[in-house]
Amino acid sequence: MKISLDQFATRRQKLMDSMLPGSIAIIPAAQMKQRNSDVEYPFRQDSHFYYLTGFNEPDAVLLLIPGRAAGESVMFCRNRDKLMEIWNGYRAGPEGVVADYHIAEGHPIDEIDTILPTLLDGLARIYYSIGRDEDLDQQVRHWLNLIRGQVRQGAVAPSELVMLDQLLNEMRLIKTDAEQALMREAGEISAQGHIRAMQVCKPGMMEYQLEAEILYHFTLKGCRQPAYSTIVGGGANGCVLHYIENDQPLQDGDLVLIDAGCELDHYAGDITRTFPVNGRFSAEQKALYQLVLDAQKACINLAKPGVLWDEVHQASVNVLTQGLIDLGLLTGSLEDEIESGGYRDFYMHRAGHWLGMDVHDVGDYKVEGEWRPLQPGMVMTVEPGIYVAVDNENVEARWRGIGIRIEDDVLITDQGCEILTAAVPKEIDEIEALMASA
Image 1: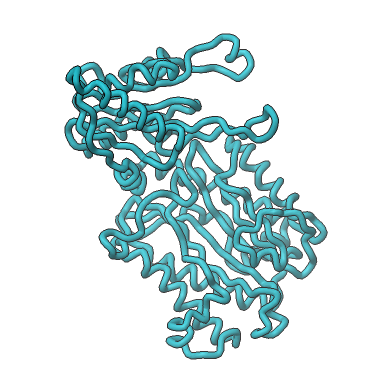
Image 2: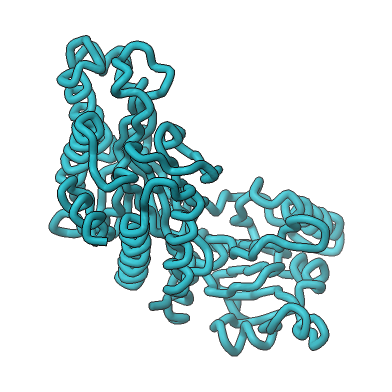
């Protein structure tokens, strides 16, 4: 499943339709980043750039110029170079971006300082995401100064700079049918990776061994990179929200929290499951786990068009706080514990986030100061959790060191919602049965 070239062209046209007349948009690609010595990190394209082009090479710049007679899309990219292609792989080149990516005009990236200022001349405004690429920020200022230096010759420099992010963020927030299908597949691959981890887990394994099993499955299905650094936290490590060391042994009697998702054609899956290392929940683990699961179900039941974003989170707060009171981990009334924030000792994050090309995807959560209502085509995570710190002396010792989070990817539909990651078990009896059968 891939996004078609026609859809990339449609996205470019939609963006240009939202731009004011006399404008140009400048969108840079990602650059290779050095890891150490002469070794570079694996390349991952900038999400905005890929969203508009499908072009997966570094060192490129896309221009969109609505109404330009010679062509509304222009791309600067690396030239073809037989020697460099022997070492580092095929390049499309300016001719390739025109022939293979539906771009109207292509130029070598080395010529951008000569050509781009001439394209700016006479335009009123630039749409550009200032602050994301300091080197390009300086180049944009340089191009503007070049035109300003030619005003006596009749040149007219753009006088307005508009942040591009808001337009693109709003576009990316609502997923098309093709994007939904791709994220459904990413959710399924991610789910099967978690199932594999449940099946192979046993006391004495290292956290990184479970990570390896999950990443192996992702790679086997064509996902060369995870969507984010995989979290495998056994025991008290599950109480560290962004624990990624993954270097400790898994102990009999502990839970293990795994937060992992694949990236498929630049779209993310994001799942968290928590399960017993030995395949059987203890009484305390079961009580807290069921509470988190109840909170997640309450949130998912609310996830439908028209519901405000914050309502979903508040549902998780209400269920978890009351449950913690019932279990004796909190001692005040529901109203007092919520008002004072007492629950935050155990639940310190929000119930979810947008999901898409970035695991924490773009899009405002508030519009004009008010919480945003959910709409069909939005994809969000739902991930309540409880984390009882090992040094929390306000609770009985039997609860300490238990960290639990349950996370699924949820697509808002016309009728309600669809759980894209439902394939991986989360009911207590289902998890224990799966692990017992492995």
